[in-house]
Amino acid sequence: MNIYERRGIKTLINAKGPATRLSGGVMHPAVLAAMSEAAGHCVDMAELEAHASQVIADVTGAEAGYVASGAAACLLLATAACVTGLDPGRMARLPDTSGMKNEVIVVRSQRNFYDHAVRTAGVRFVEVGLPDRYAGAGIRDAEPWEIADAISERTAAVFYVADRAARPSLVDVVKVAHAAGVPVIVDAAAQLPPQGNLRRFITEGADLVAFSGGKAINGPQATGFLCGRRDLVMAAALQHLDLDILWEQWAPPPILIDKGRLKGTPQHGIGRPCKVGKEQIIGLLAALELFVAEGDEARHGRWCKLAQDLADGLQSLPGCRVELTGFDNVEEVPIVTLALPRDGTLSAQDLVIALQSGTPSIQVDPTFCDQGIVAFNPMCLQVGESAIVVDAVQRLNMRS
Image (cartoon, rainbow, N blue to C red; front, side, top):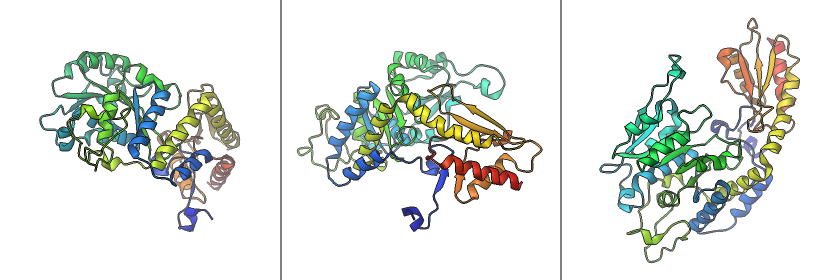
């Protein structure tokens, strides 16, 4: 029995992808070994974060980087950094942003549940644009001039959610924001693969970019990292680190924190609940280095093998249609979809729930259930699990 079963907790087969509610994926043995070794020693956390900053900067092309407890934590830190700059007094007052720049501009069609992390810093969203293309009322979305019109003396940042369908382009958003001296924060939590996105958003001018460490990178689930401008990363670090230390004693690594730019030691900041452990930082760095070393092509091939095994097994289901997407593009995650017969007794939602309730529990993607389709993502599947998924689906289909 594994450690979960000994505690009465059932493990599951994850054919949904690295969702937080499903605990993400299974880390590489080298990552686990690095975390285990890291746990056996004590270090100065600022020195560790300074090292992480260099590693992240090398990988992303940014001036600096920083590790926190997830992409959402990084968005909170990024927003706080844009609001306070390097002013310890302002840092101490958050989330009370009275008298500060406390508005963040966002395209209305990019609003989502996760942007609560931005609002946690005490800012108010200013939405722009009407998403006619999503409403079915037309083809237009927000345009750069609308962002420019919304910028005022209260604007702390522009928040941009990266996605292939996002409009306007990041390049255009950066152009109007920087013309007004306003930084741009990019939520790129799930924008890997392709690996090139590690550098893309910085190259396109973003000031701070947040990535998840527990998705495609396959690091510790409770990690994420920022990359971007050195001064803003410094402001984020100052609102995250444990600063219970006398000014005279405090000697942070200059590569991360330039003490000479501060009028005093900041108090514990709004980012303290986003604390990340030494083991998680080392695990994230090890996973990031493995992710870069593997490359898109090898990673895509590994995922395709798992997905192809699924597709081959599901092809035999009577009346069902199996399709494969993303197999021809190494920059995409290959997905297998199973369309159930419209006249069948088992609906797509029934299948999802039955798989989830079985032994072992199998989690799949319910996104397209309203269309009679169940999707399977191979990112978190282990060798041999494709056959178990196929067998479970076949048994449920025959029973129906």
